[in-house]
Length: 234
Image (tube, rainbow, N blue to C red):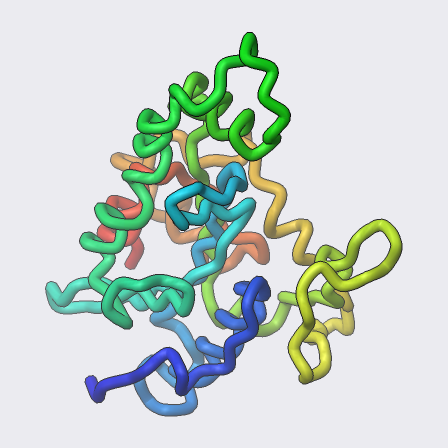
C-alpha cells in the first residue's frame, strides 16, 4: 500500500460522519479498497462526551472506517482524527484508542467531590463517569460501506444550536443526500441502545452476524466484541 497522509482526504473538524463518507469514496476510487466498498465497514462509536484537561477527547459519537483484510492480514482502521499511524492495525487501534478510554477516568476521581460545590460542569461529568465506571460502556454500530453510500444522509441540523447558529463551521460542499432523497437520518445511526446489541458475538449463527450486509443500520456490538466480530464476518 502506498503511503497516504490525512491531508490527502476531505476533512472538516467535528463532521466525522461526512469525513468518513468521503474517505470511503476515495479509498474505492484510488483502488486501495474494493471498487464497491465491499471490504469497508463503518463503526459508529457511541460514548459519553467530555473534554479532558489533558487534551484527550471523548466524543459523544465518532465515526471511523475499518477495512477487512483476507488471508490473515490485519484489518485496518482509517481514522482521520487519530494520532496513531494512518491506517492502523485493528488490534493496536483497539488497545490504544478504545479500551483505555474509561479506565483513564480513574485518574480523575479526585477532581470533583459533590460536597466541594465546584461549578465546573466538565469536572462534575468526569467525576460522575469515573465513579460509575463500566456502566458507561461504549457501543459500536457497524454498517457496511455499500449500504452507507446508498442510505446515509445529513443536513447538519445537529451542528446548530437552539438559535440556529453553527456550533462548528460546516463543510463548503453540499450536504449528503441518500439515494431515496432522504435529507437527514444521522440520528438513526447515533441512537444506540443496549437492547439493540448482539449480546454474544462468539458462537452466533453466521446469518445473524452477516446481517451487517443487509441491514440499513447494521448491527450493534460492545467495545470488547469488535475484534471478535471482524474475525467472524465472511
